[in-house]
Amino acid sequence: MGAATQVYAPSRAASGARRRRMRARATVALARLAVVGCMVAAWAITATLTTSIPSFGSTMTALADGFGEGWITEPLGSTLRGAFGGLALAALVGLPLGAVLGRSRWARATLDPLLAGAFVVPRVVLYPALLGIFGIGLNAKLAMAALAAFFPIVLITAAAVRDVPERLVRVGRAYDCTRWQLARKIFLPATAAPVVGAVRLAFSVAFVNVIIAELFASDTGLGVLVSQAYGQQDLPRMFALVTLIFVIALVVNMVLWASERTLQSRL
Image (cartoon, rainbow, N blue to C red; front, side):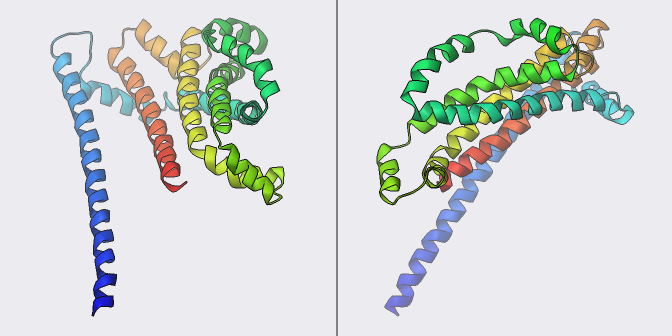
């Protein structure tokens, strides 16, 4: 009887903890929905007070027409290819370079001042040069996004690798772990969550810089559509595009944020 009670008590405690976690998640989800609802309500109220803001209904109609008629599909694809392609290029270079900077004092002493100086240069001032090199098209946007995303990835990765406790590395070496085994069993678990956070931040700046590049000069993209809608004073279309840009940024960041939290809880 005593043994059965001891087994039952932890089971009941675990069940209660799960219920509390589920209630907490439901509360957070409802709070997020409430924030969105307040934003939509504020939009609807503001639209009745000024002609500079279209109604929420007309904006959603314009957005639905954009997908239904197809004029938004190809520019959307171009913008996403620029943002995600640039992010991939930045990760391809930034992750290994960040790992080297995190482990090598010589590399940090050599490259840290250069990276710190280059980081503060607004990427938009480089876009005319990129246009001269790549022309107006996807390649210039890819380069713009890659330049923007490179710095968060390399700097945060270097900091994450540098913060791995040296005692863990010594333990691995005591067990004759190879460099690959050290990377896979020590550095990768310790840096996974910060690196995902770096990718999340890098996507944000890459996406913003692609939109800015399209507003500046491009053959297609969401930024081009926004500029055209503004020039024609087609406010429902312009706000529909801005809403779409906001939703894309929000959804991608939420997915990466959830991945980061999951890694932090498991590692």
